[in-house]
Length: 320
Ligand code: GLN
Image (cartoon, rainbow, N blue to C red):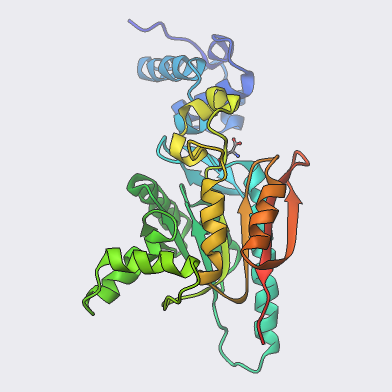
């Protein structure tokens, strides 16, 4: 038999911070904070008390608040999250704000041309997870066509759900970085007798200087890839212990995914197109080096809320 209690008693029944307990009670009772304050003598039903105890126990064991509640705020929007996706971080808003700025500049250029119809800005988000980046961009910029990839079918399921709930359209592609797009292109090419393997081979050949006919090119590529070094002690601390490891680390020096994304970005970008990626606080120099090697100019690093260089990018110079 579960011992029952009032809201006021529940607030002090554990060693968790008050803010967290209040958030758990809001979820269990399905009531806003103001209601909880005005009704703190109300007794929890046996079922509510049981649910509350389970959530407190799981939180005490370290389960992230976002996974317990099933949601996290990002860019002022509520995203569904599950243990299949990385929990969106405030630091990533730096990347999203930069993307929005780039898109608005492109839009202005569009306006100044003679064209009567607005040409949509083509955006690609790689390793989208919950879809937080792609969906926030789509929400803020009506004139974008946005494609997003992820290696995990479960993650794309969550991303799809978020896009539906937040009322935006994003095209989702399942696969490993640019292979996701090659997989998709292959359905067109298969009809012409080309195998997927051959297509992916071709995509890789481009890196060695050979030409691949890519169906679509982007104005902007963004990504928050797994960039934590595999032996970083933070992986064994806090929320990170419960997040999908493949969304956090490459199992090596943390630079593998960043390198792949940057190296191949020129193949998928229009002339003048930009790439912006999130990276570790101590990776700006390496990432700037990768951008330079891949042929980008106007390379810059932007700072996160903790004043660490967190996002780097640049543009492809327009060849005349
Ligand atoms: N920013 C996250 C962290 O340091 C890591 C996210 C990532 O690897 N993309 O907790």
